Image (cartoon, rainbow, N blue to C red):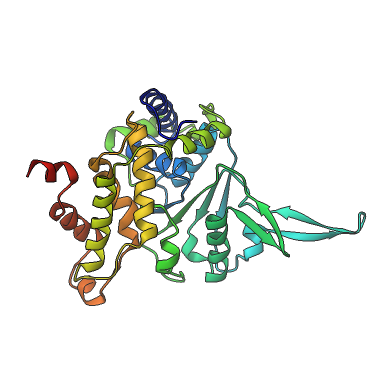
Length: 325
């Protein structure tokens, strides 16, 4: 593979990406933008946090994505009594063989849906977050790889907060993106209702690519060219988040790297082998908004991460705008 993606490779990438999005779109109607973000997250080899009300199609999204890439999917319903071993797996002594055998937990899948992650204890949350970061599980001193592709789609219910354990900022930072599915528009809702006899549309989906092709696409996306001026732009945006008066902790270097990784996939998904400043602007909200720690007084006064990001993106001149000055 060449060190930088070619125009032909970018065209193939965009075509395959569109086929994946279209395939999932058959199960999740009227939500192509969310699906594009989810696949961008997968191909940047990151994890997605969905903050949404129940019944908006989060499980359907995970199942449809897994079906489209010929992968496996599991769903873990997080509850206060869920143990770390319920997620990662456990070692059990086999009397016949006289050995300890490892029994894999539900985290061993291509796509893991962690439903209502904020309902589990911090200990169980951290067990999942460790796997997300390391892509491996260590039980009794033995490491077990979860394989590739591996993506966690975690959900939070923003309405019902009673009995929940809020994810600390350091753990939120582990998620590459945060977004919401939201309710479908009226036309999509009518189409969903007209097919009410089909309980889960994702079961009828045919795979578009293999899991090995997903790994190859992720490796190819990483070779998308990023001009130093665009890197300077991302760095400047990150610095501005740290200097904003309403922000206690701004975007870290990990957050800046996350934005560059996503921008590479986003550019390739649009048939380009190079990143534009517009790619950065389009992704800055889903990649950065959850990484802020706002000053309590400012938050009480109505300040939001989205509003601060809008102001910063407007204030900082993009590279091509500088060139015209």
